[in-house]
Image (cartoon, rainbow, N blue to C red):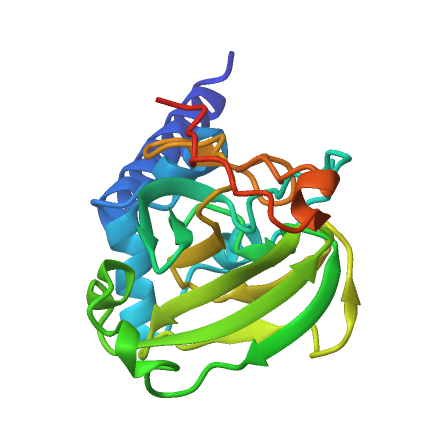
Length: 249
């Protein structure tokens, strides 16, 4: 092989190595574009990089496209309510005859919320720049948010009324609700979304046995989270509700 060709190859290899090193160093401590396509989302877009991008207003385009995904879901039949959001159940508590299932969303979860039941929308309170109901300021899922705002959607299904709260912080406050009061909604139907929000709270009557526990990951529109009461028990007057049972210990 001609010496000039060998020299050219060596120069090309050195330039490629230099470019590789530059890409690694210039993006440090974030992943290099050379390896990003082969990484899992949490490694491809580390949390600190996402937060830096949000603060600077220069969010990675690839991450924003990933974040905006809206996959179809296989909605199970029947009356049992499904999770309204993707995420991990980080708290469950009872208050005034209702059970609150608090779902924490990460940056890498789908942020489109879905209706947990089929029914009629009886209340929609859209987000603002303050609490929607001040008596709830002591609730843990609100205290952890700096200046939290909410959108509240209440749905009357065949087995009773449930409520979904979309919660975010004031700085993020991008909550979209796609349903209106008195409108019909189907189980698993898209209900709204939170842009970079991180909490959805689902409320059911306390006598509905739960199918999930703290630490369980749920999928919006697919994961059944509680057992709806039987139609005869729900409709028959004078029938006392069962003591709440949790199927997941």
